Structures are given as structure tokens and as C-alpha cells.
Length: 257
Image 1 (cartoon, rainbow, N blue to C red):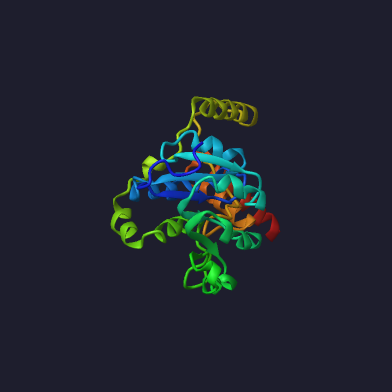
Image 2 (tube, rainbow, N blue to C red):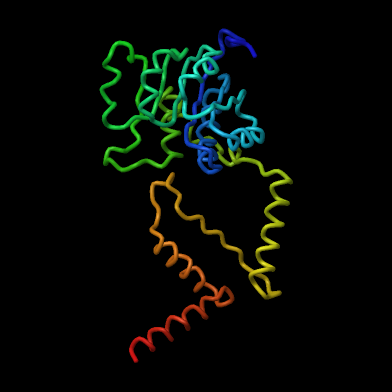
């Protein structure tokens, strides 16, 4: 690996995604990375992530030039790995208090990092003036979804270019490709699950409900998800909605008795 940019006229962007080991936590950053590459097509994008999930995802896309795995959420020991390049920009998608003392030691002309309210005055300090902060909440102090937040950080690189080009980007091309191994695993899981839990040969409507997504701007309570699933079943009698309603009516009559 070269320690400097291969071409002096090619912008080098480091994208440090610190949202954990989960698959969804990493998938949600793909659109921002894709947008970065579309808006700045000559940029060399060097991605840093945590855990094996991101590494597997990156192997299925063509808009990341290099990927490096970090041992933890940007510990001091990771600086030599990151500083193998000289960056025009480094984007760091999540705030951790231990990171800020490390920022002046990163090999970057500009650093774009998520921030909380208490950090907004940081760029006033001389050693932090090359840092741009992107709040994790909007003007109404509502938490921004991680997808939108990552896109905001890409926009902070060059707002004019971003605003001119973002509407023309086809984000379908940012979708992670599913391997044949993935498809076979899911097919086998569903066959086993359906055959062992549902004693019927009729065609089934398989509806996936994915609860507790803390990365979204809105979510439901546990009871809210149960009510959502109950409402879904009432959309078609074949999905068990009728049986659920009959059971509910029976319980109501018994309660009155």
C-alpha cells in the first residue's frame, strides 16, 4: 500500500464509520459513500469501519477504493493505520469524547465530524480550526436519522456541488448486492421456519417486521409493534386476521360476562 496519494491532483477522502458491528448499522452508510463518489468522481475513497460486517459489504460494491478495519471505535492505536494517507477530507460519522484529542494528529487538511451540542465551540480553538462540525440533531433539536446524517456530512465537503448533483443520483445503484450464498441461507432458513411452524400447504404472504431500529428518526414501542403486526393480519383473511378478530371479540364478551 502506498503511503501517499498516487496522484497529486486526486482528492483523497477518508470515511470513518463508527456505528458498530451490526449489518444494518453499516448498510445505512452506503448511500452517503456512493453519493460522495458520484459528486466527486475523481476522489479516492478510503473507508474505515469496525468489525467484519462492513468488510463483507464493501466486497460487494464498486464505489470504495480501499477498506481498512479498525480495532474499536477509533482508539489511539489506529492512528498509524489511518495516517498512511494524506487526506483532503476525513469524515467521522459518530461522536466519541476520546476522539477529539486525536483530531489534530490526523493527517488531514479538513476534518468533518459529528457533534453534540456541547462541542459547537470547538473550532474556535486554534488547533481545531480545520474541523467542521455536523450536529446530530436538526434545528428543532430532533435526532436526525443516520442515513440523513451521513449525507449531511458529505454535503459539508462542498455544499454547492452537493446541492447541484444530489437530485440526479440514482441511489438504487448504491444497494448492496446479495450473494448466492446469502440467498441460499435465507431460503433454507425460511423453508425450515415455515414448514416447522405453519402446518399448511397454501401460498403464504411473508411479511418481515424489523423492530427496534434505533438508527431511524422514528420508531415504535414494543406494544406498538404488536399492534402493527395485528393490524397487518387484518388486511387479508388468509393471513389470520379473521381469527385474531374473533379471539379479540370472544375475550371482550367474556370480560363483559
